[in-house]
Structure formats: structure tokens, C-alpha cells
Image (cartoon, rainbow, N blue to C red; front, side, top):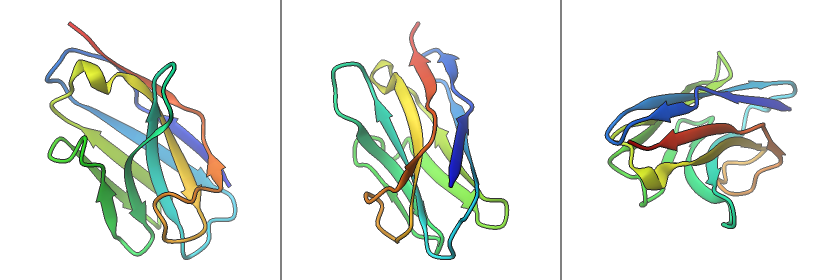
Length: 118
């Protein structure tokens, strides 16, 4: 499985971005694609995930500001980032797991940088 994240950029506080994750390869019927983020010196942090069954989970740290959508047919998952704060600055990664767990990831994609500053 290959994953390609895109859509990052630089925005001012309060701004919005939509990140895209394109999956390819042996995508199983049962799977989960999750978004994680990481800043230098910190562990990678779960942000949001979506199962192929349509269930979604959002981290409490971003709930109410971020949403996750996707299409199994298109093999795409989107992370919608709204009301961005400077502390949301990070490299965002999408990851794929062959289960319905939001945390047991088998493959990782390249990251996309999100920078929030005035």
C-alpha cells in the first residue's frame, strides 16, 4: 500500500486547509486510514481516522475544528482543518491499517507540512 499526503501549506491563525491522502496498492475491504501529526522533539500524535465502514474518530485536541471524510471508491481520505491555531503547526502524515483500529497502522505515507503563523 502506498499513501500520498498533500494539501499542506502556510496559513494565518483562524484559517483553513484541507489535506488529502491518496491510497493505492492492495487496499483491503476492511481497513482504516488515520491522520497523525508530529513536531520536532515530540511523539507522533493521532489526529483523526476513518474506517472503510464509515466510522470516524477525532482526537479531543482538535474536535470541533477538524473533520475527516473520505471515499472508499476513490481511495481518498480528507482531513479538513478549520480555525487553525499556531499549535497545529506540524508535519501531517496519513497512515493505513488492515483492521478497523484507528491506531494499528501498517503503512505510512510521506508527510505534508502545515504551518500556522501570523
